[in-house]
Length: 468
Image (cartoon, rainbow, N blue to C red; front, top):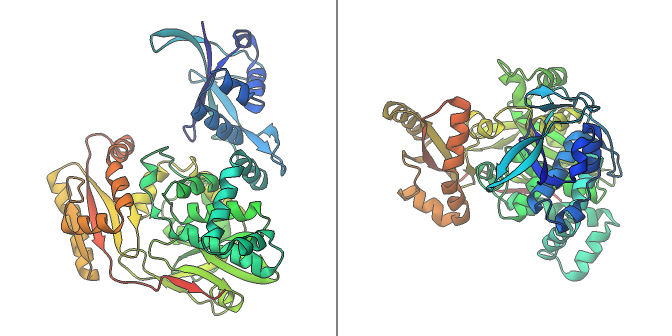
């Protein structure tokens, strides 16, 4: 009989399964995790057919959720507060896990099922080590992406010079090229419901999605850029921004919300992390970079131009039009534990973050300078008519065209225009329906239906602000 170890992280839902040695069913949980999670012989497990390629990747993802990594990427002790469960009961590291029979493909196997409970784990991730580990797993792919991106803009000789990062100009050209490539990728949430169906992506996951033709929302795309530039040793920090958020950042209140996850009556605070950009320090000069897209201009502001948006006195807003309304975004430097903890929390601790981005945060499924496309979810004809009326009224007031389809179709005039302008994005939007409805029913109860809203946006902001 084959013996299977199955590990699932209860926060993210990530899981892996592998065939273990029969004798290992008699060792403690600590011994089992040390052998197969902390120090797994991945290559031999793959070559012997004891784990699939997909589960091998998930196993390495789960490592980063259980163990703290040092700056060099080596795994050390478990995160404080981590716990393990079997059959809804706690199990200690010094206990021997139980096995249970199961049928897989008509064959009976013995399964050791371990659930990881991280609800009491704090924000202790070492981002330096985390990024190093993630880069090393696909170093060849990421390095080739960087070189390809530079080669698309510069000659072979220039690319070699830029990659040396010897001068300030080398660094500026490096950052600008990678930032522009990421900015050009879709501003989207459709990928939360297709493919790997990740509810929220880390920097490396967002980068892979971009490499595969997708994109992300602002914080995912910014993390993708930071993931790259961190590897190349270029200093940067997250900069938060929000609509009409002109006052100093309420840092203590934001930290409190990341501890309690109580977001009720907190919109006046949450607007401060509505948006994010990166601030680089290149040979003594500030460089503000925004790679969001989605009708937000490409920002690459150097020196005094960056300070005009970031200054403590006479701070100037950036007027943007994310969908149908103009908004004044104010940028703020902030203690880095706040954005780092927020993005860590969005990987799973903040429930239903995939739906929150689409509906509560009104980011829809896709935004460009030309189109805003989102889902409309309803249970009855009356509910659909009410929601449709609200969209049509808001768009009429804003002076933009809008079509609302109850049947998840892009065959309307605006839908066809969207398909023509962004055929790959349109096909991905169509593919979203099944899993989005599954997720919505899980969160809000069964029997929902879904349609699509397509809004043709007026020509908005200039799409580049570049002083570099």
